[in-house]
Length: 213
Image 1 (cartoon, one colour):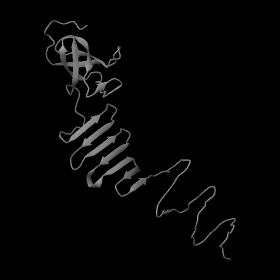
Image 2 (spheres, helix red, strand yellow):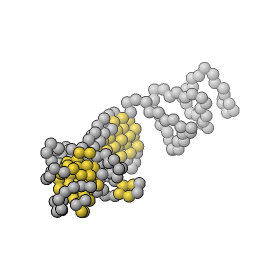
Image 3 (cartoon, rainbow, N blue to C red):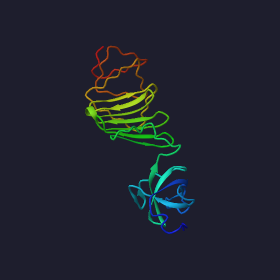
Image 4 (cartoon, rainbow, N blue to C red):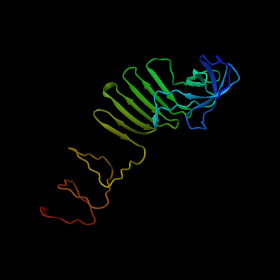
């Protein structure tokens, strides 16, 4: 029960988050009002909230939130505001076609509707996923020199290290497969309907039907 004088909590209020672990498991946060010496538990409004599903962005400790009161005993957190020591993240440029979600650890999800829709996800360690729908569309996954790029006409994989594929069966279907390597090494048996070679070098060679000596 929140104790206060009648009529004190009938307007919007600013409050500071002092606890965000609800002992009752109801997703509430505990806040301290800035207009009066009072602490209370408040539910957090969300775009979607249902049984076992919804959107969860729980305010962190010391964030400044905006409270609305359905009744003096039912406060709701409408959202957070940048104020005091907090500052707008550098990604949040003041453009109406630019939307950013940044976590305290530095993970960023960025939406940019200028010059063709684009979506980008970045981590602090350098991983990046970029989707660009302009010029036919392109998807890039990269970290440093390693990258995978998909376009409407081709797929490119660039790596400064090994590229490993592990599977019970790998099927390749193409009009032509071209391998440009100083040496190609196979273990086991290599079977082909037709082999065309300028030279064959081997410790053993067993000719079959159709070979001419």
